[in-house]
Image 1 (tube, one colour):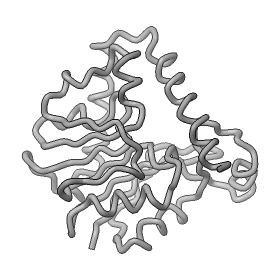
Image 2 (cartoon, helix red, strand yellow):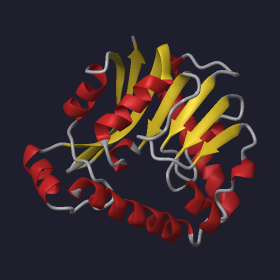
Image 3 (tube, one colour):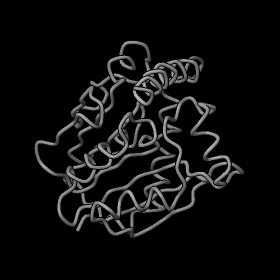
Image 4 (cartoon, helix red, strand yellow):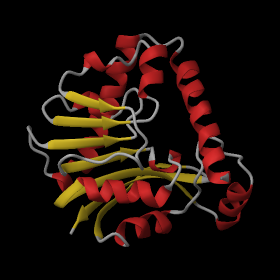
Length: 216
């Protein structure tokens, strides 16, 4: 109950954060900047993914400008529980802007892929979910055998602060607080092999990483 309530509060603040963040950003300028950001991300990990145009992709927890915005040569499924809110309140996201993508307004835990995909992305979203184990299981189930699972995370650097953040909701947007080893174990316990751990940004409390895993 506590975790569910904390998640609902986090979702409320997530929607407010995006509205405030994008309030004074020109749509075209922001989306061009964001596309360049995602292209740089793909350049840093693309060698491990072996992506080919026409492959099937899942963008799990996609937000209003997820990695789906640069995947126009792929068959994309994008999932986020706040998509209807984003579409109604943000000019920066309208589903019709991305005719190659199919959007689902669902929690990650409740989502089921009709067919497993070649690559699953979950970028800066996994610690926003309500039920973390169920969300990771969804990522695993949605990937084909031999498919890739790409997860970006904010991972704690210090055990002391990790436990403090778990007890007190100091980081209100993120209901879950874990370190890098714990996130890696969540994938390996499911039967995935970690292929790449890429440090994207280093800070005192958290480092931002991208994990690339392969489903066995």
